[in-house]
Structure formats: C-alpha cells, structure tokens
Length: 240
Image 1: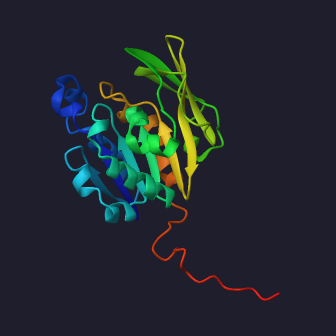
Image 2 (image 1 turned 180 degrees about the horizontal axis):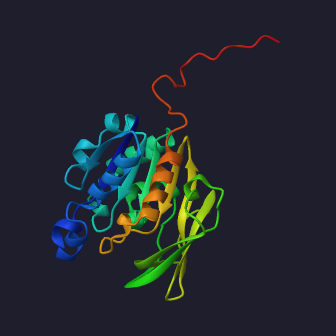
Image 3 (image 1 turned 90 degrees about the horizontal axis):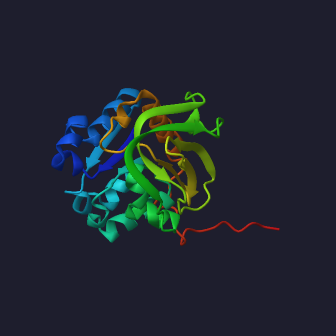
C-alpha cells in the first residue's frame, strides 16, 4: 500500500467564493478522490493550519509520496518544515509539486535556484505537448493535453535543467513553458507539473489526473535511507 501525504494550503477555497465554487471541499479533496480510486493507498491531508505542527519527521518517514500545492501562503510554511520535507526527499521519499508550488520552500531548497518565472492570469488556452513520450509520467496521454483555460506560466523559468523534460506548455498568448519536469534528488524523485490554477477545474480533467497518477507511480521510492543506513555501520573488509 502506498502512503501518500497531500499538502494543500486550503486558503483560496475558504476565502474566495469563485474558487470555492470550483473546489468546494478543497483542491486536496479532488486529488485524494481520484488517487484513492486508482491506487491502493492511505492518504494523509495537511493544510497551512497544521503543516508546521503535525507534518513531523515520523509522518514523512512513513510517506512514500508527498504531493504539494501552494500559492499565497508559502511564507507561512516554516523553514524547519521545508527542510524536513527536502531532507526526506533526499532519503528517498517521492515528491510532486503542483502549479504555484514552484515557489514553495521545499521545492526551492531541492532546486537550489530562485524558481521564478513569467506569469499572466487571463484564462488562456494551454496545450501541453508531450516531448518525452517514453517517460513513465507520459504513458497513456497521447500527443498532447488541451486545457480551455489556465494561468499562463512562461519562460524564463529559473530551474536547473531537468533530468527529463516530459511536457512543454504552449499558451494562446504565445508563451511557452517547461510544464512537466522530472528530477532525481539524492535517493528521491521529484516531478513538477505546472497546470492547476485554483480558479479552473484543471484537476477534474481526466488527462491531468492521469499525469498525476503516473507521477505518483514514478516518484514512489525505489529505496529509502533509514536508521540502519548509518555511517557507523560496519563495512566488511575484503581479503585480497
């Protein structure tokens, strides 16, 4: 059974009527619903209200995949919390960062760059082109995904070169963006996926859901470093 931790700020949905109309029970509830329908998993939910007090080392050590959505409250996530998340990725926990989580503290720590970009909010059409059709995250998607409305994210996106660039987004206004980026960080895998503005029902789109489900499978740990993997452990001496 996969153990999945979802962090969603859960501020827009409680403070903006238009967002609440799209996600009345929060973005996290939609993510949880379609993941549980597809995966044998146990899901924990954290929001900005409890992430600093309850997302502990013990929870993260018991997490296979952490999914992170953030936008307007990045600064309310404590540096210590971000450091814990990043450390567990390096130890083998998988992580998926969605939409504006490019500016979240854990993602910036893992990338080591500013992670800034261009953006424009006019509800443009976006086409997500599959540029690495052999990557596991792209399986079952086809040549592209078309979204009627999305927030424009554009280059330059200040991130390290991805190990695999899976999707490039094209927007009606002419901008392009590295919308699906796969990384290895330490023992862990990281996937960044750009679509998911809170005012649009992006996470209800079956193709977007398929990408996220694929990403859950891809970032799930191959191996975790635990207390047994310590520098003090004895190393056998080989006889020559």
